[in-house]
Length: 355
Image 1 (cartoon, rainbow, N blue to C red):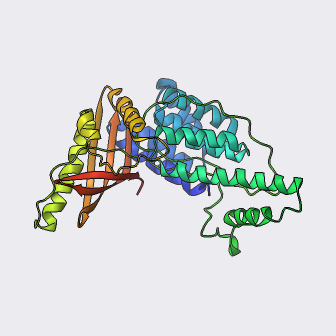
Image 2 (cartoon, helix red, strand yellow):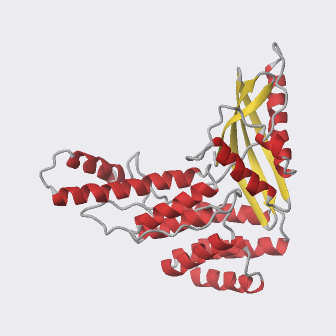
Image 3 (cartoon, rainbow, N blue to C red):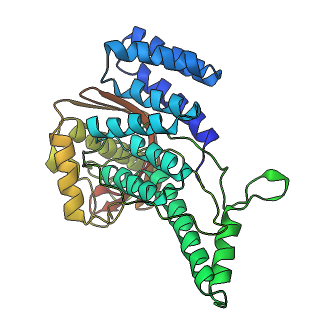
């Protein structure tokens, strides 16, 4: 369910990598020093160094995010909530602070607030897989509370008990203290850093329902984002697999170039008609949101590293490490694009981050 301890270490690792891209060595040292203190359990020293850095750069999103992680690990959820909430207000395009807020709210059994925060993370970045997973955990917790309440009101309802037992089994640890295949380690802390997406106002969360009898306890984790782009002609019939792979690679790089140059016609044109936008947004709404997010940036840079392509007939998969810079933000993440050949072009039909 909500992956905590492992999520914390992954967050630190991703932040350290992010800080190294496009930033001065002195900044990288500051991030690295705070990360090292946090990993060593020297939370007071880590917090003091983060505050010292923020005194000169109060809007730095990465150090503020890291401070929120430190406060969470220090057992100060109230201060951590304030830190992440302010971060969502100043940088609404970042989904990770919303995810971490959800973790903190879930730790306080405020599952309606956790749900609202995760929905904002997904609205900001529909490809944020961890937020989708955590939202499922929150819904399971809310369902458990509802089933428990139903049994309190009608103990003779034979249809409720099996449902409640199924959810409890999902969250229950296996023998030896290890989680079941369906459950991840229980945790109490936040998530990682990823690609950028557009801004959206923070919703006013509704009060959390009172915990029901014998309801299971969850806890969240982190992940990363994704995005799309234009394609290039596919290899002609009878061309070698190597030629097809080259065409797919060219399509992916053209997509990244269109994104970086804010060429919305080329960027949105990279998506095939089969592409189903993540979340519940329609294709037209998704395209409009992407347009606002991209055109609204004054400067964008997208660099692809370690690009690997696998072609199977008229289907292909491209995996790579993406370094994204937009204005004051620098993000590094793993990304996967699934493409299909449509006529003489390779089109994106699915994208995911962190894969």
